[in-house]
Length: 158
Image (cartoon, rainbow, N blue to C red):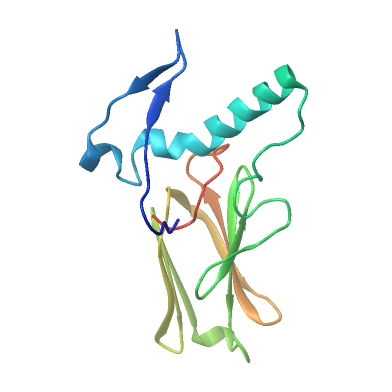
């Protein structure tokens, strides 16, 4: 995500009692750190439990790219569920012979007529053997199995 202006980052632990937790700026603020990967789903679970206790219905929106709402990025859009991500790269007048899609553990590259359309360094790993692409009406549609199934990604790029 993009942040503008000053940002305060804090961590707490909730067991056995609520307490602040210190962290190393370089190590723990890395987008690939374990606590950042878990933060979105843990915060949503915390809200859901709090909702039960307080009988209030407000929760944060679901994870990005869910509930039929594609998340828009600069050159593509994407959706996700517990097991897969789907990326749509808009292209007009598609000739499938000119499409080249490369899958890596944490990256996807899409070329059309040898020109790179999209290069995505992924938030988390994918199962390369579980990735496919197809031609939609006006886009190249890429579907990949998540490496860690059951984890909702807060964003697609690392």
